[in-house]
Image: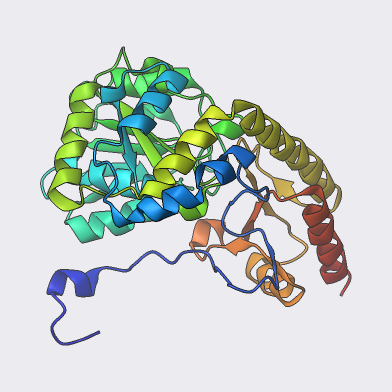
Length: 353
Ligand SMILES: *Cc1c(COP(=O)(O)O)cnc(C)c1O
């Protein structure tokens, strides 16, 4: 770092993303992308004519995408705001609903960015430990008088809370915003979108990165009460009004409209997940009950860090986290059936060694 870096930034520990090797050397099961290509409708939407229009700024209101999304989710356009990935929407929400004197509550084992953004934005973190079995007790979040963020299903555990449990948290915190990060909801979770008209403190964050094959396009949606969305727009228009590029707006619309492809690909992931879980358990792994597009697994047969390393040597990338509670666990993205077979073959070799 330079001698000019501010004291605050010196104290920030940036998020470490999963490895993104730019050659095709690895079977990539480390950052929860889809193994399938985007819908053919997306390929058609990002046309040569659209590329030519890159000369012009994108629509800061994202009107066409909002119309499509509103119809898709049964909401009004003013209840939705697109973001440059859900990461951006989550950041905007923290900027809007927390500050030095208004902390953010979140689990000890969850998405790592929440803590990083708290550091960047001078927001105190109130870290609420998950139970021994990695489940979350909703009562731990009652009446905290803090903004709350819950990933549901959670990462990296894959465990999900029923909608009713989140509803309990919403009722117990009427004066605080409850952010529900639904990055993985399409793989077997229960979405809170149907609660939006009932709870003015609910903000749901979804992404096109995991279930709609658009991780590289960077697109997410924040959904909630129109006043909450207006607050988020205040932040967006104070920072980067053209935050979604033209091609991504078109791609997102096309992806939302192709519900058949969406349903087919997420069903394939769910099926492959069940098969992989069975196979891992047959090899002595413990797998949590995943409602996401990954499995969180551990075994007494070999240490998590070592397994990660040996898998990488054999050309299979998975994710390992150093946090003490989960140091013996691996997070494995669900790929194609062929990719999962390759993972299992590599594991069998490693466990024999
Ligand atoms: C992947 C992920 C995100 C970020 O998604 P982007 O839309 O790609 O920014 C947010 N929250 C959780 C829990 C995730 O796993």
